[in-house]
Length: 279
Ligand code: DGL
Image (cartoon, rainbow, N blue to C red; front, side, top):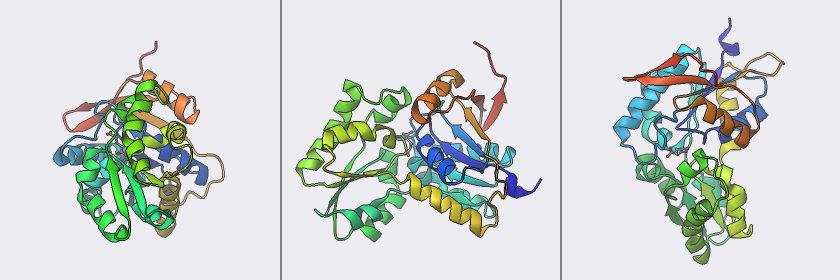
């Protein structure tokens, strides 16, 4: 089989990368996609860089076993920790990663004040520092880690009082300081944009980088001559290292796809597929 028909692997700590998968599937509906959510390890946000690299390496090995022709690290935290490292380890493999969308935010803001919501590990990484240094000289950047928000989204609590309170704590002071542009620097957060808009009353623009990442994947596949020429709809296959039944519920809730995800688990540094259990 030609490599062009091989799947693209999409990877996140949990359900966040589904916001990226959805856009990839919209833009490139004929591509076969394999999604892996590392729900046994979510949240990634506070984990040390060495651990994030080792996890990303294990996931990459697993996705290569599924014959992936390219890998999208649909996670800002894992991209910040491991993207450069993986590119050096697998020089022939086209990777696409995430970086907080400070550049478009700096171009779009009128008040000159932008807010970034991301995990502690993303803010601590050199990738974020370099993005701010390159693109944010003329704007003031406000940051917040939204503690607990990733776990709320993993549970499907998109608009509960606790979720609202986490978002209000992060966003209200930004609005009071004049922030008019908010960057979703974590792939989980686009799923709470409707809740964010209840707080901002749509007075701040919200930037979800997922469509830009999908376009970047298209460019990368084009350049590598790896676009799938088939016209029929691609297959979507899902794996989780967490609970596959709960994952199925989240996939249905968040991106309206009914599937039975495959169950894998970490055995030392590697992911192994295990039999499906029927409930
Ligand atoms: N969705 C991820 C990100 O984009 C990771 C969130 C987490 O696991 O803490 O950063």
